[in-house]
Amino acid sequence: MSILEEQIKKLAKLILDSRNIVALTGAGMSTESGIADFRSPGTGLWEKVDPYEYASIDSYIAHPTKNLEFMLETGKAIFSARPNKGHKALTKLQKLGKLKGVLTQNIDRLHHKAKTKNIVEFHGNVMEAKCLQCGEVFPITNMVNQVLQGRSPSCNVCKGMLKPNAIFFGEPLESQVLQAADEIIAGCNLLIVLGSSLVVYPVAFYPQKALSLGAKIAIINIQETDMDSLAEVVIHEKIGDIFPKIVSIVEEKIENNIKR
Image 1 (cartoon, rainbow, N blue to C red):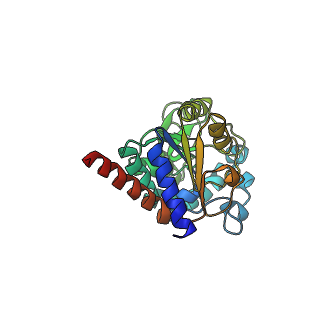
Image 2: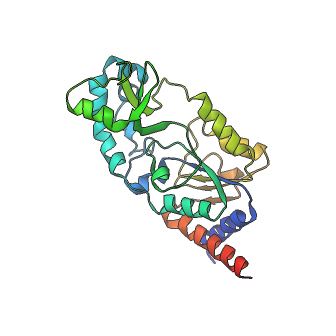
Image 3: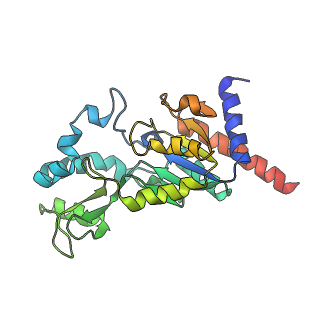
């Protein structure tokens, strides 16, 4: 049996033995749906453009037209993307009664499209627009249509400036989001990290928090992370190639136990 096969079986057993599982997902979860990530060496979006010029709240307010043109162009892949095998495997794991919820760094809403429940979006999402003045939230199509018509995107309620409902550089994470993440992680006894390099805080703090609460962690990510040495299982492969196999093993074991 290869090392990879051993790790696959080990993670499947961890899942079967765990009562309360949480997944933490990052950009590597979505790259397999055709969405470019932000930080990978040589290919990340922020190596091609300055994030503080195109994705900071100050830059957006000062130069909305320039920023919106960039966002519409880069957003095409997100708007057309569909859940991949990894997203669907998480949904299956939840239907099997094993997955409590998902903490995600991603802004693409692919977990929602895959019908997974109980999702905390640390960085918001780009399928909504939010008014900077009154806080009202609208479908992103409201904002996109205004931009395509050559108009400055404005709120239907107060006429304030709209922005995509994602966290920009210079904006804090919302307190209610962090509270929801804390509540999910509190009862977790297995945290599965999928496609996150665990370098962006405060999100990168959650595996450490899970460990401090007595949970185990497992990591599936192409690149090494600083948490690899503390994980029960580490697999450096594509999520879509590996995670569905693990969930299939779990499903088969559960079905066999039910038949008995």
